[in-house]
Length: 476
Image (cartoon, rainbow, N blue to C red; front, side, top):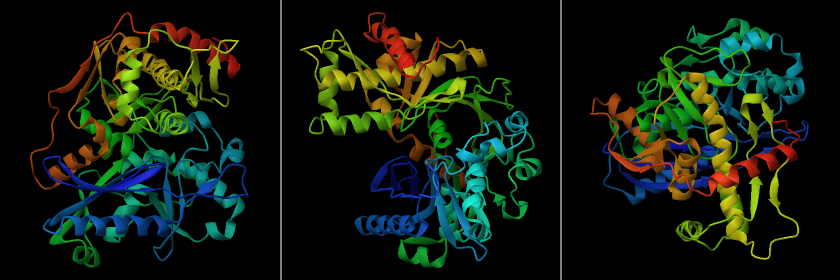
């Protein structure tokens, strides 16, 4: 049983050790605004837990003959759950919660914190959320007995143990990448009591036996275990078989470009994030254009809700010119800058032939251009000169996006079987390791997209760049 907690939606999946996804249940994540802050959102753990357990029950009813060996989970990064001193989860602080933003100038020595944690001093990290929480809710803050990421919160539900995986711990800015443990100094900078920092579990290892109440309810073996997962991006990258020095792009709600490195990389300009990989033994260097795939989903729902994605792809194939550019990606990562202004940019007067397909094609173009902008700098930083890069994630279902990114980069894009459900496939591989089965290895490419010199994206890119920069008052 796999629990995959995203930003907009979450899923419960029943899967086999061979990588077959037998069934799933999806629910929309519900958030609440906290009006004591300019931009704060939270979720209620009990609400999410009820939906997750209901999904498990429904899958067990659908597949009554399946006996479950184990449970695992992955979750969106920078999302945390707070527990009281009795071990009850009482508040969820998701990645979209920015309650610490107003207080970041109070945090000392940002350069040293970056060197330790691989992350900027920003409201995104878990420590900033805790810092902001204390500012407005000092009495509630005193309730905290521990915290963990949303993926290990699932482990706590099923085993009663509150632990955290290194790939998620590094998203708190309290984790020392080089020492591979909590940093007392970072905790002091954020005025966080070390006593609430959880112990560690490593991806692919057993967190504990499943509690009897769930073994009985969900057709589980007596010896069923919870296998530690971790951050969703790192689990997805596992599906690609990414090797040291290679570049991979994970196309989802956001589109991180990552390179695997053996040791943490320090970049004085703070142009990259450094992430602990699953288990924390190796590291990923990351650049990210921010919100991408979510923009495309929302634009399609708004503009052409009745069209299938296949119909859109067929329409894109007929395009020989573009009528507008779009800018909705949210980060200029290498400058640590949020992009606040965006929209559709069209020639004046309005082109009579422009239609909604043009607008959706432009959204894909925005994703491709913004991703290439980050990827190009990551290749330079890591001295990657490969003739290819790897891809995974549901966004690469779009052949148009695949061709755009391959053409901009001048490199082959290689995607492997299971890329659409990369996070789930990575978690299956971790479970196979835990049970001593053959792990899922890199298979033959499901598709290879070669660069196209005549691809329309080459004409689109310079116009897109000019419009994006003007809208956000950026200098070239």
